[in-house]
Image (spheres, rainbow, N blue to C red):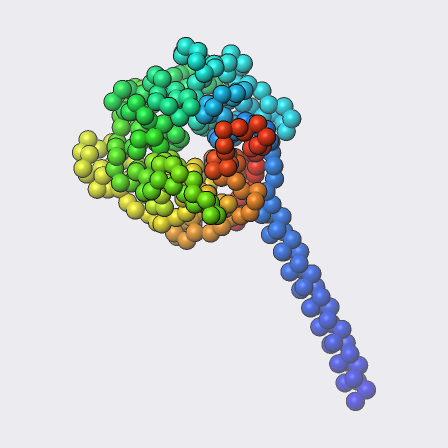
Amino acid sequence: MKKILIIFSIVTFFVSCKETTSKKAAEVKNQQVDSTANQVIEVAAFKGQQVTGVTLTDAGRIFVNFPRWRKGVDDSVVEITNTTVQKSYPDENWNSWEIGQPVVANKFVGVQSVVAFENQLYVLDTRSQLFENVLDAPRLFVFDLTTDKLVKTYILDKNSYHPDSYINDLRIDKKSQKIYLTDSGNSGIVIIDIKSGRSRRVLDNHKSTAAEQNFLTFGDKKWKNTIHSDGIALDTVNDRLYFHALTGYSLYSIATNMLDSKDEKSMEESVRFEAKTAAPDGMLFDDNGNLYFADLENNKIQYRKPDGSIHTLVEGDKIKWADTFSIFNNYLYFTNSRINEVTADISNLTFTLNKIKLAK
């Protein structure tokens, strides 16, 4: 009997060891999977060309843009066909305008954002150069992605922008047939009616669209600038538009039906403070209701869950002013525009387009 008990104990010991080893191996494997999920993958690099916007079509075509904040911008809009081939979009002529030349209808001047939506590419042209006043009315060019031809131009009405406006980003609302745009140069939101093409301005100089301060802090250095309503994101499930000043820490939202109100006071009163967040640039919702945004000052990308909790997706030196986001095939694409690092000469600086797995 004693011999049987000894044998049983030995067998139990080895089984226990095997289970423990298997459990630890599984834990290591899971840690590796999590680590891989948080890896930043470089998609493309641009030396001496400061990229801001990015968008991907449903078919996976990639477009980026370069604002004309300085001389020497090679292209305003580029399609990335692979890591080494980048071609002017829709062609070289559209991208051929140079500072000092007359402004013409069929050439980009100062492109700040690109958004692909339902087989069309929306190109937001601030019509501004060198951070100066608008040269002529800001506009939105719409290209058919099947033919790569211009199919529509929305030119902002005079009462919907200011001389020092910098129309920054946009979201397209199919339900209401509206396009919403932020103005980071002079706080406010611009609404374009898709059918009529007319535009109007709302929440002009309202506290929800205005900058809260005139600087951001990076380590022991201050980046001094006053940037108003910048990031914009559309919650299509709950029909709410979210927006955020860049030099500020407050996230706001408004029901999209209130943006049709003729009563400005009622509209302003319906704006909802959502949360205190890090200072971000662009923002974007995924299909699960997570709102992605950057923590510019701390080299992070974060996301806010539908329950209001805020989490960090990734952080580190591979995040350098995560500017704009796009989602394709379960990956979050983002540009590193390195705005706080830029000086007069950027010829030796490399700006990147990257991707990372979405939050689970």
